[in-house]
Image (cartoon, rainbow, N blue to C red):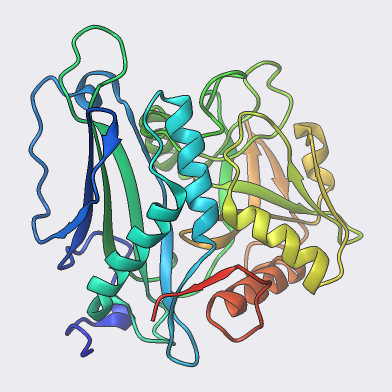
Length: 341
């Protein structure tokens, strides 16, 4: 299929409307078969559950063109499982995991012309999401829901190379100890907007959120998990019941252990030990890994030995290996790559 006339090398990380999107509706206790549609607009009753009580969850993933010309996506089964977990926590009906993966394949196939070519640095971002669509005025779950998948081609998250970020320790809490931090609920991101806007106004790229109960342990940022490297090259990630289980982070830990032969550890990480790490990064779908060069804790600077000019050596190996797997340059573990075409 002929690709769309897009300047793939120079597109940003934003929304570009594509031709098709998937829509399925839940009514009378069951999902319909779903369909692809040209219509990018959603019409809702003014009292829809999503508008009144933020009953919505979403996922984020990408489709890639590999070195040998295939269109693939990365571990969609984990996105399907995480969306199921989110739906259950928000008292929403589960969209079946096999149907989820099928719908991803159909939507990407229908928008094949928007999948960027190999080597362009761009990808097709995939956003599955679900929301309460029927009217709700009392505080309770909606009775009807809509599941949709949109796609949009996006450029690299960071233009002109990946420079280490400066972040701050936030005074805001991202999630309550027994709240919704472990699921991908829209409400989590809404409550992080004020914190990220004020961080940007003060010259920081992101917030480091601490645990709400004791404010002594590292959790995550507004949209990414932390990954640390010790001075003896052990890869460490924070463990908490209120951290979103990042698919990228889980994959990086496998890469570190099985591909790079490094020791890995998922454990509680205390703020007062962060100064002792050699490298720090933020990991997620959008950028894979964003290196952190400096953390500012209320005026006190924590500077990592990896510096402010480039990724640390272990972070760079992790990044190159995982992106190599995604792009087909390195053999993937079984089940990681779903070939669409």
